[in-house]
Image 1: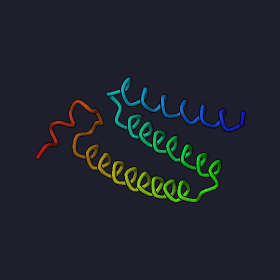
Image 2: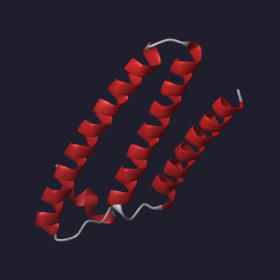
Image 3: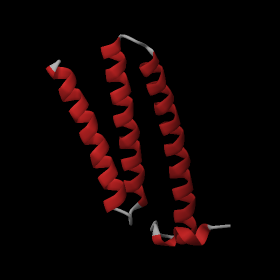
Length: 101
């Protein structure tokens, strides 16, 4: 039981650190993407832990779906950033409003 509480606290700590990374660092888009990935990882870790505790496989399936969506989001986000960097020469969040169609 103590091990499960430690794992839940690690998952909560990862989630809180990622929220702080998104809200406190609003200038660097790469750090924001890494924080978003860490948030997905914390949720997946919590789902896997609850799946093991409840002896059910549904949490593990949802965790795989979350990791698949996170990988797709990461690859598309990095591709957009590479194109944006080639056009503008810099990556700043303040200039992202210029990309509106």
